[in-house]
Length: 314
Image (cartoon, rainbow, N blue to C red; front, side, top):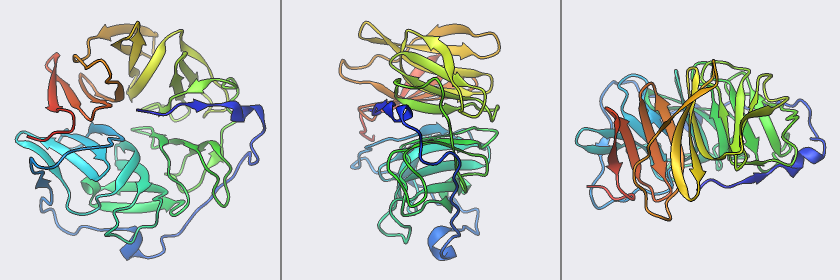
């Protein structure tokens, strides 16, 4: 389940109003794994394994297969089950797909030479190629979002690094440098997550127990977009948001169209009483929902299909 940020930090000035950090890869053998073959390296996951700690979900750009970021690396769903890579099995956090791959943070696979934490990674080739952009060994971004078409990054830094104080930051160069967000209008708000707009670099959303806030100036000022709703998780696609709200102990899905602020609701799969939605990805009419018991549901042809049941593999 996503943790909650109490944004009292905006009651005091950030120590850095504009700051950056850039780190050259220390060694191409350590900071970048390059594949020189198109061979399918993915391996089917055995039924004796379980899936835990899912921290991101979406659909691959080329084949539209569902992919999740787990405690033990990336996993993708095919017609005959779940597959994983034998390499780069990092504990990914803040996993976000973009047109040119994905961004992530987290903790490294102990069999690799990546530093802990991972800082900001950019991945390509379905996770075979990883490039360290910044803050390796310093930052683990649990709250990170990237615009699908823009690759504009918005993050919340929980612990100080050698150059950055805790707070909200943005990056317009793929995570190589960061600039602080002023965050006017967020003072005292409870925030559960941050979502970059899919196609508008300047637009970013914050969501939580009181609704959704929107900024159209790169996070410097926010105003209410959705009010008086307990928003649990949000996904972004071109021109729209899809989110889950909680009402009287039950969950409901909502599509929010940004051009005219119209909405339409959709049903969610039936969940156990103590299970909470934690990730929602949207790709046109398809959606991917992850819940707190490590279940994964895919919305296809107007119905939800269970692709992973409580982390148990077939």
